[in-house]
Image (cartoon, rainbow over all chains, first blue to last red; front, side, top):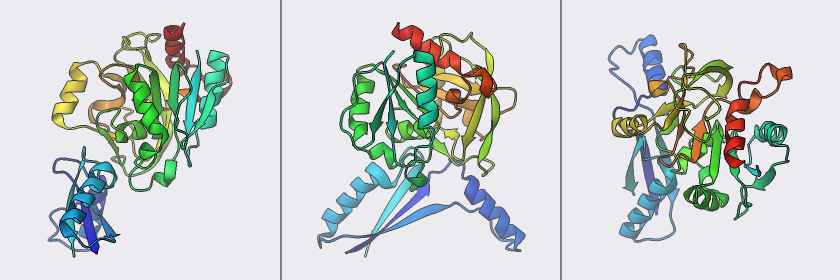
Length: 79
Length: 222
C-alpha cells in the first residue's frame, strides 16, 4: 500500500524559505503569485492492506517524528 | 561537579564542550554515545552543538528520538541540570523538554559571528553568576536558530521568567521572536541556548564571558 504524507507550516508561522521562493518567482515575471509556503512530502510504502490501520499508523508516525506539531500540520493520503 | 556530554553522529562541538567543562570543573566529563540506554550519575548533562544526522528532516529531530533520550527525559524529571547548546537546544525542543521550535534563520543564511547577550533572568542555576541585565559577548554558528513559539506559549514563558538570555543591542542574528537566545523549562533545570558559551572560556581564545554560565552551575553543585 502506498501513502503520501504532506507536512506544511501552520498558519502564522513565518516561512522565510517560502518568502524567498515567492520573491524569486516574482523576479521571473510570475506576477500573479500572491504567496508561497514551502512544505514536505513523504511517500511511504506499507506492507499491510488495512487502510484504517494504515491511517492510524501514519498518524502516529506524524505525531512522533514526521511533523513537529509545534509548527507544522500534516495531511495523510492513502492510495 | 560531575558532568556528561551526549555525542550523536554529526555532533561537532562536543570536544569544545569537553574542554570547557574540564577547564572549569577540573574533572574530565564522561562521554555518552547516543545509543546507550543510561546516563551516568552526574550533576550536569550537556547536549552539544553540531549537525546531528546532518540536520535531516528537521534540525535535532532524529537525534531527539535516540535511545539515550529516554534516560535524559527521566533525568530532567528528577531535577538534574541539562544544558543544550545550538544543535543541543534544537534536540531539547524536538524532544519536548523545552517549549517552542527552532526554525530556519530569517535571513536564510548560516550565521557565524559574535553577538551580544543580555541576561534577563539571573535567578536560575545557569545564570546566577551574571548580574541581571548584564550584556556579554558570545559566538553563534547556526542555520536554524530562529526561535518560535505560539502566542500562548510565548506569554507563558515570558511571564514565568523562563527567558534567560536575549540577543542585545540589535544583534539578533536569526529573527528569533522577542530576541530570545536561551530559555529554561518550567522547573528551571533544563536550559537551551543557540550561542556557544563553551567557546569563550579562555583569554587566549578572545574572552571569558561564557565562563559565568558554567561557574553558575559549579556554584550550584558545590
